[in-house]
Length: 546
Ligand SMILES: *Cc1c(COP(=O)(O)O)cnc(C)c1O
Image 1 (cartoon, rainbow, N blue to C red):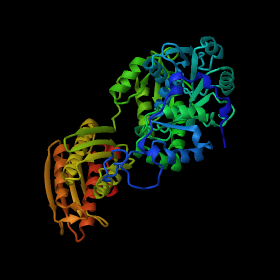
Image 2 (image 1 turned 90 degrees about the vertical axis):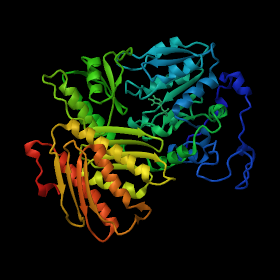
Image 3 (image 1 turned 30 degrees about the vertical axis):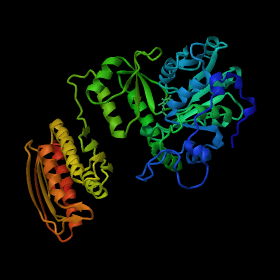
């Protein structure tokens, strides 16, 4: 267990106004009673899921994290992303227009931005050409008004771990605060600086749920440090800086851990060695993070080529120290394959544009907001969040049996009924299918699926670019659970007209649920057949595909 030696904390470097500050005290702070009648915070008394303010002290989250990291809870600050911690550290320690911050270059851009916003001078010590720390340069840049040194290890965008001895040398010598940003620490295999917090009262470690833990959308990040420092960060934060959903999901993820880390690490090694083979690549820097810094012969042209083919990387080619470099995040294997294929095609005549198997469509109307990502590389994994469990289950059939990975997120007016959500998902999915097969150029066009095993549905599909719809399915009842059976025909007819393809659907059977499922399955199989590459070797036999 790491505890902090608060007594050695250099209290004198706290800004005067922050020392004097009486922080906002929330209504709930004053009444620490157990469950009761809350008439203190002007909330709406009716529980519609989110009527109460979230815990301003993030107690459960900190308890979970403290266990995981082996620190005391009072050594943890939880912020709206670690970006919040970066900003608050400056506000607690630096007097605008008088004090300064020292950092390295190149590094994460937010340190400089946060310093500018707070009107604090920002000084940068360039890393050496091999991206190692130039300790002397850092020391030379700092003076009596230097309050914080920001270091990032593994560093963004260079990907390397800074030398620990060198960092600790600075921590020991420097009178102010040294921040070590470990946003990418989990990818490095290094235990990092948290275990050293007990020895160094002027050290702050930043970590985030945004990278290895896969929760960038939730905005949860942490500062670990001496309990005195953490108290000051807590005093200046917005009282309810972390919403309840973020707190709850972060707790869950911390318990579960990251299940994707191993896969990303092995992809990093695979992509790095593939890129090293390519003639356009000058250098792939060793990485301890989930990205690669890659130097190209023609970085700008390469960036544009990738962009024009739907692959977005970070152009760092104009950044001092990274000339000619792009920063490439490690994606899913199929995405990485596409990246490698595009780069290896650079400058070749004729340039072979590999088919883009990734389609993203979003649509916002008065009734629904939908984002859909379809991946036609064949994995057939899905993340379906339409808000209608049964509908998710049906869409999952399309994904699994069609070999299309679907990520669908919907916020819809389900309090009215299912109508808009089902219709709009059909529009977006139809649009995505159309975009894919019109870009594919080389596909079978026709597909069919005959009754087989438990399924009793026949589906014929013609991706000829013309919408048509023929539906012969009788349901015995009006609803399956809460789901109105009439919505099925509506879904498929909307899908066909948005996708501009012709669909013939027939199904018979006793059980409505099985029948509906069979229709979705048969549709998926017919679609898979129609989308199959027109290449002669891969023409699927009707036996093979059904
Ligand atoms: C991504 C990143 C962060 C941002 O983390 P959030 O928790 O998402 O705010 C912090 N530091 C570095 C170096 C990063 O690359």
